[in-house]
Image 1 (tube, rainbow, N blue to C red):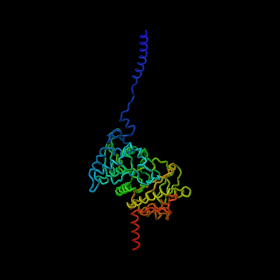
Image 2 (tube, one colour):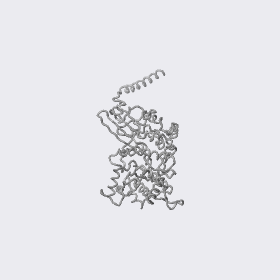
Image 3 (tube, one colour):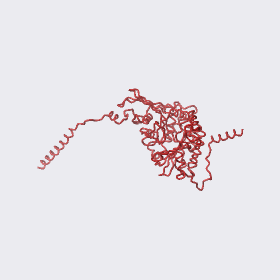
Amino acid sequence: MPFLNFYRSLNKNFVGSAQKLDTLGEYNPVYVSSFRELELQAGARLLLPVGVNDTVIPVYDDEPTSVISYALVSPDYHDKLSDDGERPKEGGESLASLQFFDSVNFQSVHSFDETISESYRSLGSTDDSILSMSGSRTSLVLDPFSYTKALHVRVSFEDNGPLGRVKYTVICYYAKRFEALRRICCPSEVDFVRSLSRCKKWGAQGGKSNVFFAKTLDDRFIIKQVTKTELESFIKFAPGYFNYLSESTGTGSPTCLAKILGIYQVTSKHLKGGKESRIDVLVMENLLFGRNVTTLYDLKGSSRSRYNPDSNGSNKVLLDQNLIEAMPTSPIFVGNKAKRLLERAVWNDTSFLASIDVMDYSLLVGVDEEKHELVLGIIDFMRQYTWDKHLETWVKASGILGGPKNASPTVISPKQYKKRFRKAMTTYFLMVPDQWSPPTIIPSKSQTDLCEEKTQVGTSVE
């Protein structure tokens, strides 16, 4: 009898389970997306070959940084860098120096948390290295700067996915030198590539119209389109730029230049139809990353056309006249130590920029009221003083196109711009004196400035 009851219960459960299985068996999937169809829906090219260390980078046609990111992990790029590194110039560092540089400065992904505060140090900190280049662990002297078989690396690849067949070409200008710079300024090359893999368009306030601006999705880097003239200027003064950062890092000399970490030309050609697009972009650090900036200034040291009447609202960039207008009621106070470091950094950077005939740069200043700090850096230093800038200076100074004649134009010679910029930045930031403060703060002059003064004195005596 117990066995009969067990049999009946087992049979009852089996019938119920069988009915459930029948229901499951009656389900026929209407549609299962293939990988190619998923690629088409997402707008990403997912079928490209994997990069070095099995790195997978999807490419988006409307995000040039994703193309750059893929190029930086491609075997072709790494092969060309390796070939370049094996042939030092005469008198250059040995390959052992290159290997030492790699072992010292290449930070792993796992050490990101430990180095993030050092690598992305705010320029507004009151630390001794308030305005010094972040990550000054090793000078760029131990970098592969002398390995110049190919200054620029060209990488090409194709994709023949459902989005159409496209050929991409990326030119990495001064690839080896920028890689060396990134190993000092960034936690790791992997993190840099990861950041560039996605970006979003960004309507930068105060930027030129019809110029492509973007931010990486993690907000670490800013991507800006550069004109042909700006690109040509940078290619000319790039060796001086790298040498200046090398010396600043090696000696601990303060600098507040916003670091440009790469310049690239991205070309995409749709083989069906022949449509081709080309863009030159620079990648620079986002000075405001991780900051709660309530007020933002773009300062040139000029009063001509330097006022933003629409000062209300978020993300509004204020100009020189806005700061001067606010100084009686809301001045920017800094401590004695910070003031001296700021002046030294501005003094050093303007001496360098004048030496390479660059002008029209700005000091970007963000007020972080939450941390009671200033975040600042010199930006827009890609333009040299060429004949068209000479003409612009003359037109603005004459007042033909309007504007007060007694106000100096924003575009003047590099030496004049340097002097005006220094004077204005000293005036804009008011020092809070302490018991150790001298009556006046006179920034130490660079060797270049001292030589200039001696030359001028000698000329006047004659």
